[in-house]
Length: 218
Ligand code: URA
Image 1 (cartoon, protein in one colour):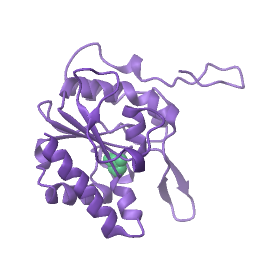
Image 2 (cartoon, protein in one colour):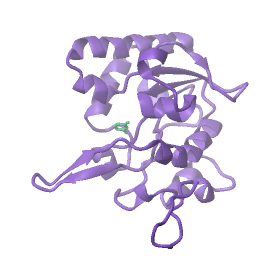
Image 3 (tube, protein in one colour):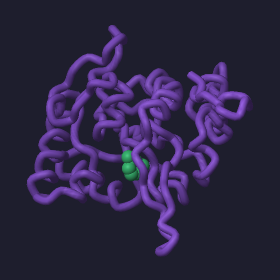
């Protein structure tokens, strides 16, 4: 996919495929992803944030994109949403050390609040999500988990298609479309949505319940 250019310059690429290595495991992919320019998000982000965990993980979690702290540290889910996720995983009886954790989009997208000098999260577009999908598909192939938990709408759209809606599709393991022997996929809310929810306790309880279903499905 390419972006249009009004000034006649070369169109913007929207596809990570040319940056993927032709072989190698997770470490080779992580090294290659560091140089990805498959969409314009690489320009403002500090670094590519690749997944963490081993290729033997039976359960993979997919979030949206790195946040401010993840962009600084280069590791997914180390900020406030990550801390909430860790607590929910513990409550659901899931050992975080055995997981593979990644994001649908590997660069932080944000706007700047110039008065307060903060970087404010901006939801990645479907086009950016699709551009980054080759990295996610490579992680899926290399880890080959039994179950994938998608956290929120962006991750759900990346794996289950653009019509995915968290409210309608959460909590039930289903086959990954287009992958006959592939993993099952279970959708739940994004931990950041729990942090923003008006009834935070209810939203958190829902997340833990879905993670328990995931643990039972393994
Ligand atoms: N939100 C995400 O979706 N991923 C992260 O890594 C951090 C926050």
